[in-house]
Image 1 (tube, helix red, strand yellow):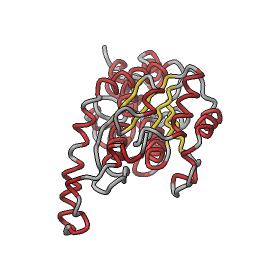
Image 2 (cartoon, rainbow, N blue to C red; image 1 turned 180 degrees about the vertical axis):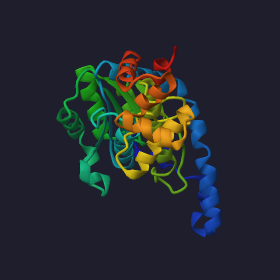
Image 3 (cartoon, one colour; image 1 turned 120 degrees about the vertical axis):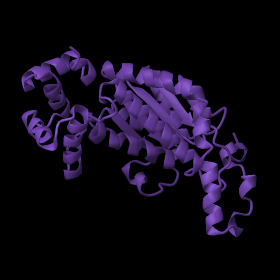
Length: 297
């Protein structure tokens, strides 16, 4: 497919005089264009739903979610993966972000790195891909060789495959059991897919990882009860979550947090049920990590 034929590479007729606009006019135009992104995502929610269900099943069976992308797409995957451990208390290896060109490509452009199908395969080999895993290939254009190589290798090993592109009839969709095509259209700045296409990918990755973690019991009500208090801000947030979930005051929340050895879930269960720390941990294990189930009579 010729690059010029992609919707993301077309010229936006609403911004042909972008260089003549005032600062406010540019900002207003970008804001208006960005509002179209959620509607584009809404059209593929049924496919996202199926993918999330598949990822939850995979993780319950010992599998991982692995993002593979290049450029902005790859960076967004790495970012989402990096945010899962502190937010949801999962081990760093449960959600992995791979980017063409390696770690250095996160902060600088590595020219040509995305053009190798073999590199996509090699990066998955390096993380010991298995049939239990789910590989989500990310490419706004939908044609990146690195991503195609990764998906082909995942197919060969029997891993579940998904793709996220911002063009219709994307090449990467042909190698995915769960193809997501978010058609965001021409960018405000022609071909700059870090704009609407990047926003779409960021939103979708947020939706996928957050919904997966809810499905794994990492959330109680709308609270991130598996948050890891690795710094002062998160330490205070953890105690705040206990207060919000149970209605106790700050002093009681701090006391139970200490008794539970920093385990927010256990502290909540202890408060709501009157159980000891040990009993709360047993109940939590029996409920497979779901606090709501653990506190039911």
